[in-house]
Image (cartoon, rainbow, N blue to C red):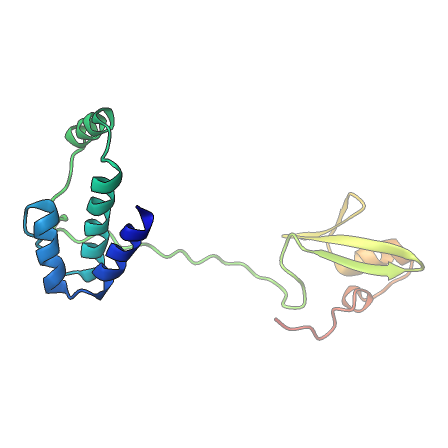
Amino acid sequence: MAVSFDREITALRRMTAKALREKHLDVFGEESRSNNKGWLIKRIAWRIQANAEGDLSERARKRAMELANDSDLRMKPPKEEPEKAKTVVLNFRHDSRLPMPGSQLTRIYKGETIVVEVLQDGFRYEGQVFNSLSAVAKAVTGKHWNGYHFFNLRGRRA
């Protein structure tokens, strides 16, 4: 059954749109308004398969009719122009040397891995929030460091 079905589908793909419309008339008993070759092939193939393997059960057909009757189908699109999307500009200043908030900076210092989370308004290191990378570097080393230099972020551009 599958081999002959495959042959029929292959034959459908070779047909012209006019020949497919004639096949549609033979299979469905009504003319197709479409000249779309892909749509006709799918539709005819579905009908051939349904005839070969059996159509929807009566219960499924009944349920489909209930759903179709309950739905409000729009036959034509509305004529009024849809509302245009509004663009909102967010003022977000971000230093191009830093990764985006939520990222983590890591550095190995004296055999210990230092992990700092970049926040929207600061940096989190060991549960404490710092205003600058220099403050984090000072907390780690005990000495004043340029924070960008300490985390090797100098000259980095987005």
